[in-house]
Image 1 (tube, rainbow, N blue to C red):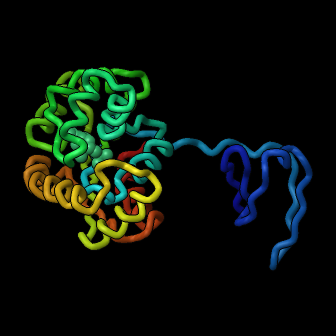
Image 2 (cartoon, rainbow, N blue to C red; image 1 turned 45 degrees about the horizontal axis):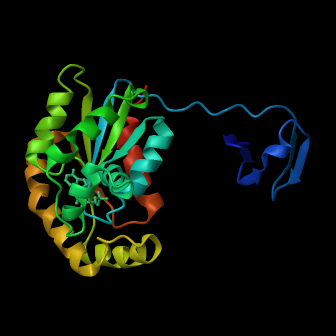
Length: 239
Ligand code: AMP
């Protein structure tokens, strides 16, 4: 019998129970046996990194890097930092940085690093980055890759690049679906093409820069399929 906690509910084999069932006698029939138990379900131990690790998610827009980065961050209990999200927040709040960044974002172009560098540096210094963090959408140029190295000089955390590869026609399909839900100004087919071209333009530079730190993931698969490939490579980083 496999009992696992999927907060705030728990699971026995493939049966899910709500939190209200905890500490109560549970009895249920399964095809081959009848199982009952009482008592607290132990919190599953979170996987722990052997050393501070910076995961860099590299992929075209709509490659699923945001989704996968969020899942991995949750699993490892580390920060998920998306420069796209940081910038969108600035735009929303109409800060000086946001107003400047918007000019580039609306066209699907890269925002010059000096405009938002201070915001990123401040974010990386926060407590939830102490054990490691995920960079989603950064670096996007060799200059930015060098900036990561510079910021990492003191601590020398391990760097692993998770590169999500997706066929271009799939990217366009996914983007069309996402545009309907998120209503992002830069999610139109035309701007997407610019953003894919921007990504393609720098991809090989970054792959060369990081060399054997890059792990290639076939991200044409569904969310669970991609996640399991990522989990496989992360496994070697765990205690
Ligand atoms: P994303 O959500 O990662 O697709 O980013 C949305 C937009 O934010 C990009 O098209 C850029 O305009 C801007 N942006 C995000 N990250 C960066 C970055 N590392 N360097 C420059 N611009 C960025």
